[in-house]
Image 1 (cartoon, rainbow, N blue to C red):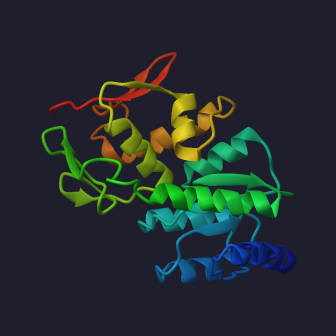
Image 2 (image 1 turned 90 degrees about the vertical axis):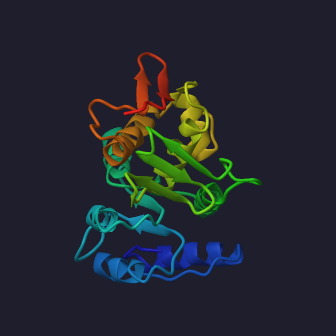
Length: 228
């Protein structure tokens, strides 16, 4: 839990611990980075207005280092562009202050639930696409491009698996939003577009000419297994 307002961290900590979570507090950006480097945490709740190092930079450095730690960003700004920017640098969810601690706890549960494979796994075991260019191993929660492991956020991984398990099927943005957040909504379609853009930069040989994640204009996206 990363916030320079101690009263806020203590309140949220109490709610999370009541749900059985173990919570560590950090009150500046550098401390948050140092703690995350240990690899001991399952999720970070990250305020953007922090001393020494802003939350945006914390998230950016985590993603640049290959950290896939899920991040829920907290901010006092409620503009759509601010949310898009946060998602663009690797946030998995976004909450605007003031917020309900109970809602935050629910979102923490939702993100961690998405990280757990369902019975039998989201896919059978290992799938290869593009003549072996792209590999998805859901048993190990592992994705590789040309046999090199790539770091995806929890949301990017969920999007990729949702699309890849149904090659050729067209998903609307609302359906993909439901898959990654558990809520059917058409009110924040650009969030899906932002995650897809980030995902393409990681799995496509040429992000502006994707061979796997195709846009279906006016509808949404689909996954194709092109042998290239």
